[in-house]
Length: 509
Image (tube, rainbow, N blue to C red; front, side, top):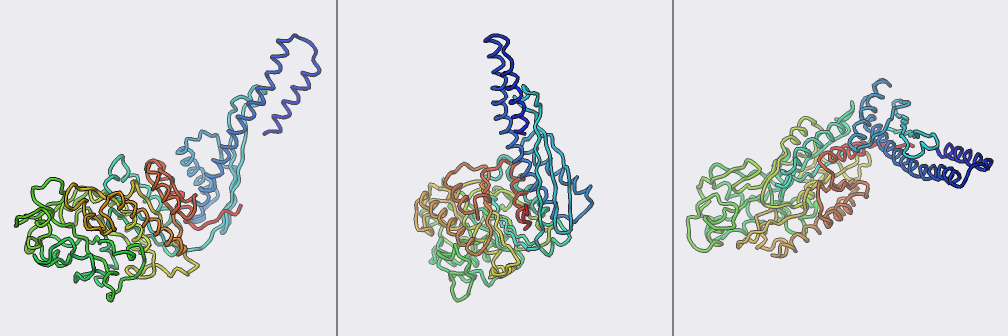
């Protein structure tokens, strides 16, 4: 490109030096032509570099995706690449006149070349009306297996601006890409962890043995007065009619809340306490979950802590999202342990919905994302960390910062995975300090997960909070695996890019 521009400028210069006719105005006019050509070369060359970068990235992504499909004819492969790149460039708003020039594939490699032309902006003054660019890429297949945990925000804010619909669609496409190929079911396992401020663990492989059924863990029952009846969460559920424990759990006491320590009956604090949002006082302003008559008088705190009202009761419940009521309020759908059943995973993706109230606790979602990849209980589908034939990965997405929802009541907050703020389970009764403590727990978990060799992708979805953006950027395995606030349309491209990267292929040149 530049050599052609240089030749044109040199020819103009030679003609100008030989020609002694005309006046100053003519000379000035002639001088403007090479000046414009030089300026045009700079502008148009910059455009060509940008176009080449876009094409190169698009071709790399297309070949990585193609390599996950069974090998077909060259004609079919060219059509696949053409459609894939067309979709990418359209979403990037890149108006290029391009084509697939060549394709060469074997059982182990795929190589292709693209070329494109750009209409020049200023170089037309030297009769250069277009510039051409060309890119070539090659991928080599690898046979590494993958285990992936999708840790996905299902809080109430995901119900706005079409975000939950965009997440469902992007998740389904990611799953399609990961499970494309004749050996995919042997090579790929995926887990799904929807989170709010807690995670629902009542899933295939669930065991009663790692739930604190007897009320022996230090936080089990702290919301209730033992002088008024049983305080054990499991027993309270059993005492009510028409409702059962849905499957959400509270955080374990520190430091177990940010560890993969397996549950052990000999250490009750390694077990999980069933989530139970207490019935809050009748007719009182500021409380958000009233589903039983109080049956006693006294202060709001006493009426809430009194457990006699649970025995034999028929609570008024609503467990259909996004707005819910009852002891399982704001508890999302169950997580899905590692599986290679694509139909089941897609059905789970389609069921995702937002759940209002309670807040957002990314740390608890991430902790369970780690646990479903772990070879240790509570779920044991993951291979040992030292297995070099398997790459484990977490994809973590949130559309908001960690939130402890304030109540102007004696509770100081909505009930959440750490209980009420008033009880200092996070070591504070300050809302601001509590949020910072949860942010610190996210950072701790990210480090621990990466130390196990797990690849971490992070996405802040339409989020402007600089603190959380920094946490997520540092959480990712590297900066290229952090995706900053994509739009609904761009989320699908981000998931597509992650899926291709997880295909365990490498660019050979």
